[in-house]
Length: 302
Image (cartoon, rainbow, N blue to C red; front, side, top):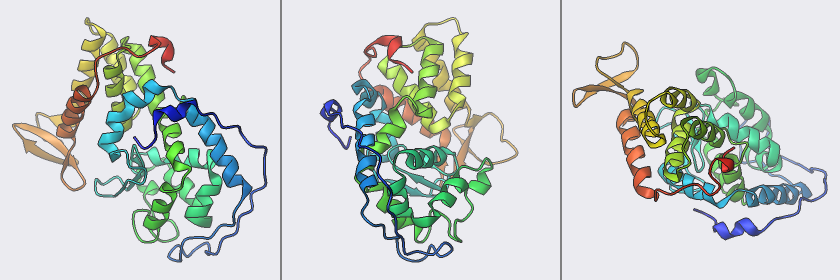
């Protein structure tokens, strides 16, 4: 993890509103020019203070429970980027918010809400267009070029790298991933309550499912909740559902499916076996965390 958990005790005061003084040198339709230049603004400090306050409110157990997923996705590197190697367009940050999966829409919304000054500083005047593009319902539309260049190519790569290396990102990425407003943390909390678990290890699995598989984690939890077993047994059943999503007895008519040990596995990008990846993630998370209870039990969940 890129910060010490002890920093949670430091609460920054939110500064009074200040005007945003922005100046850029790039033209609207020429993203191939150099990264935009922004004048120093009091708003940059104001945003940083607000984000530091929100970061300080994250309960310590959330960092521990989500650390395995962050390690799998990015090794905890704030500026981690995947340039469409898995077929999901551009993926960025500690939990790899992606274009294809729709996660980048969440990232851009949080960026606009909490750090718009940093967004314009690094992404330039096309930031609103980037935000609109990655938020489109249709996946193919989300991956269309902005200003004539796809987000995982050309000048967008150093721009996003610069954004992810901005000091505000050290706290903001954790706020977007672990706060009550995070769709991933919210989905994992809902699933935990449905299956009745307060295990840190179980929650880590559910959070990982929310990050990798999306809102379907709630549907899996609803199905598992009716099983005649205990909470651990229900989460184990969800782990099997996760693998089954990418594994078939017969070859489906669409998508890249390959025969692996007598089963058809779904592959994406540069030969990523999603069924095996799910098996590996489940095992790695179980091995990484001690099996103990979440402090506060159910009351600690969103």
